[in-house]
Length: 135
Image (tube, rainbow, N blue to C red; front, side, top):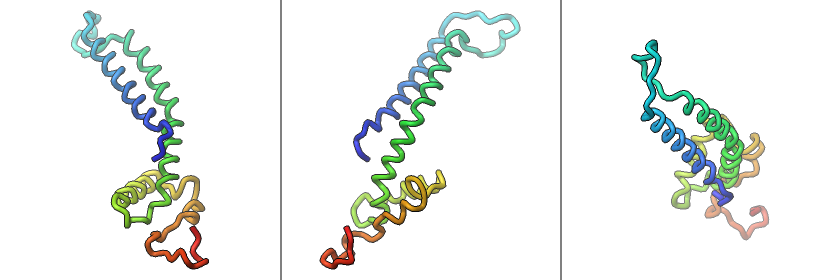
């Protein structure tokens, strides 16, 4: 993958998750006496939990575009090497791309035409001295 600040998305989502865990932990530790009708229930302090949930969910939703663009960049950089399994480590990459395509039911970056632009034969089997072989 290219280094185009893709790692900001998972790190940000981890920070949001840790912030929610921390808020929930401290909200449960606060002394709060529930009304008699809720005495048997386990509950947290609603004045802290509800306001923290809304910004967290909005933040995660705002990061959706960055996550999709990072997936597109990763597929764009990985698809040309999809059938090149001669290099060490490429078999895992091919397996990962195939799983992504099956999970999201997609063919290429945009549609099936992307696969006609991909070199399916490994470079070690091509004779670059002939004019029929294009790079």
